[in-house]
Image (cartoon, rainbow, N blue to C red; front, side, top):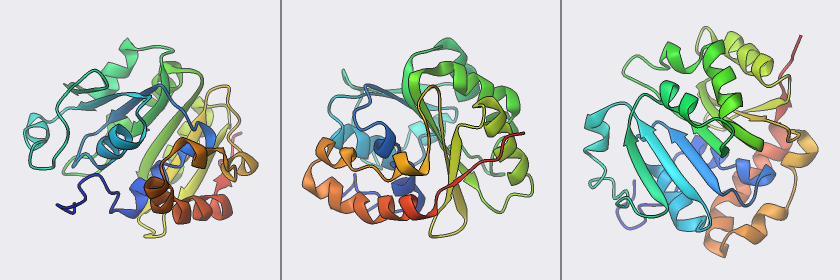
Length: 218
């Protein structure tokens, strides 16, 4: 995090995850599983004033660092909840326009956040037209199985993008919203963001448009 620009997305994959704006430029209800340093929370809070944002973090020690990472206080648009994200999404069926999953622990990707049952719960938590955006470790030995589970839960309506840093893979999956290469090359997103945010994301969005590929679904 840059102290002079705390809401700037410094890490490559976080800019990739913001690619949901290519498909849903004006989300009203955004949830994040995994708070971390709050980069995505801060960016969305600043640049998407029409969105309500809920960040769910299981580790209270991470939440305790929110002031050090300059994460805004809770307000009418932002709520940080101490909870198990895998359980929390079962409480909000059919309500989310965007669900960002970026939850990791000291061992990597928690099994509870990459199971078939979890991705089915993600599908049910989305409103019609809603999107799941999941950050995965591209080199994880079970990565192909994780992709297969997402494809199964979302009936094949999903695409993946390997980040330019190569270690991460971001998956976009939709409920009743087509996730296609043509859609990921859209331009409507620019009108929803101020110029500074457009400049920050434009290069990564071009990368998405050229490098996204569909998940296979049996």
